[in-house]
Image 1 (tube, rainbow, N blue to C red):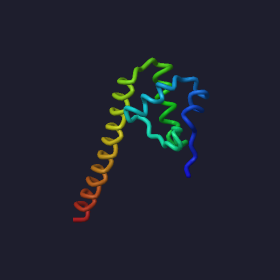
Image 2 (cartoon, helix red, strand yellow):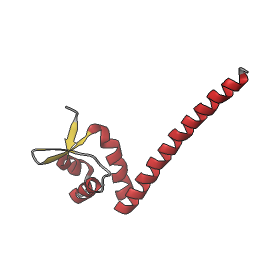
Image 3 (cartoon, rainbow, N blue to C red):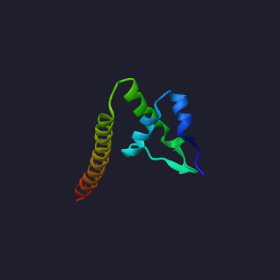
Image 4 (tube, helix red, strand yellow):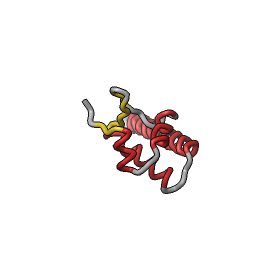
Amino acid sequence: MSERISREELVKIYNIEITFFDELVDVGLLNIETENEVRYLLYEDLPVFERFTNWHYDLEINLPGLEVISDMLRKMEDLKRRNRDLMNKLSAINDQYEDI
């Protein structure tokens, strides 16, 4: 079983509103596990949670803003991956023509 932390522990440690955590889950920004009606966040997802918490509480970014930023960052990562793939293909094509 993966290491995880309960929603209640997160609320106490990070001094956040429980509704903020629930809203992140409801809009799909956080993935959780539920066991015996207790919601858990996997430790591997903790950096994402911390990022959203900092943006919301320190920078005062609302939930729709968090959704937009998250979507844009995901698209940027996808574009970086696609660009890397295209550059690798272009390099392979160049290598073929250099051999001719």
